[in-house]
Image 1 (cartoon, rainbow over the protein chains, first blue to last red):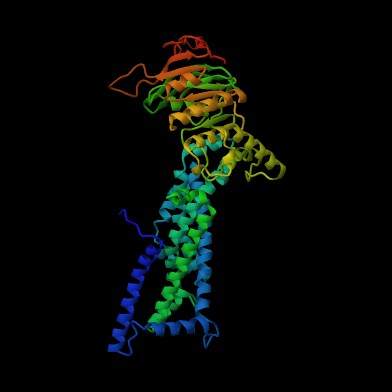
Image 2 (image 1 turned 45 degrees about the horizontal axis):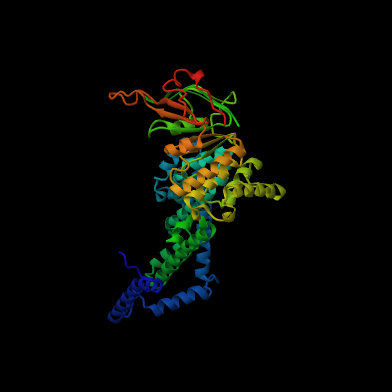
Length: 270
Length: 263
């Protein structure tokens, strides 16, 4: 408990499990290939690299588009629009619910109930109401993510010491001024953390919606390829999605630390 | 400077009576120390004047007019903790008071107004000795420095009444002595009426011009909440020599005899 690895050791230790998994895969893949040259379940790395290169750099023979980028652009557009709307709703409503008792009394229980509805259960409704296009996918992400952000931020507002709010009032601040100058800046770090935590669910809703009805997108491609047992496409796609999500998470963490140094003052002292 | 009068104030939380029959005339410019055991309603008394709570019965007047029912810029406050905004720098913490005043929607100033506000803020920081730390965040300040910042912040809107809720309770003895040396000149220069709640009797006697003790003189073991605290001692600290006792158990019964002391 008291012995901690240094910086280099930390990176090395973090890489070991990844390396072990890769090793198990390579060995397993070679074993299966040796037993059955037509095995599709664990394609060798060379084959995956080849397929990925084709998908990422060569235009598709029929459509003339580069498949990986078209899929990525379509999916990220849905994800970003959905997350942006969910974040905006979450921030505005969360702040109002947490700060103004009348808003909290009016919408608090509604949000609590809404957040308990499994978003996938309303997907058919969304498809019926909003059609099979982009809108229903974006709405699914918003529906799945926004209530959680609202509740999380309302709790974050509630955790602010009452003394601060009273102090601001004794400096002559109105409720609106307190909202924009005292509460909003202080819940921004929590908002970013909240969005980071919701990246996983957001991707889940995106892939699910794409799997059920779409003609382009990362989730669509994976589920299309499933029919052909094309693990050499599915595995790189899963890795690519994971990488995208990880990079977003990392970028958000970085933005939070750069923009709100006061919120992380304790961490840097440690 | 404002005079406060507290007239026949009761505070009850449901069945529990916290304060009963509080009658006080606090003269303009007084430095009133409020002492008493824990749970005697000292902080409740302060919150009443702050406007954070309202009396169940009775009235509080400020310069003869009824006290507004919510905290406002005429009454500044310094709490024991959490008084400063952690997301603003030292300068920003004082500046925000002027920004609240000058800009209703954005609460941000620009141009000449901003320069003017910065100059005033820097003047206050100078007074409390924090000017060298103007660009630090509160988390980088010691406890004493944070309290000095809270005082500078509370002075920005030129309050008539300054309320201190155990402001130096969390500080070490040395820092506390420095804070005592700081608060008295500020009280004189800014011409405020100060009400300070404290646990430290030395501090209460050393700083105040008047001292009141809140305590529960009656206690019913069957119903602990039945009787609330009253003013048990009311001392004038402005005279030399032995402290005269203005009202030992009398101040609460005969309000017109408890006179406010002026410095």
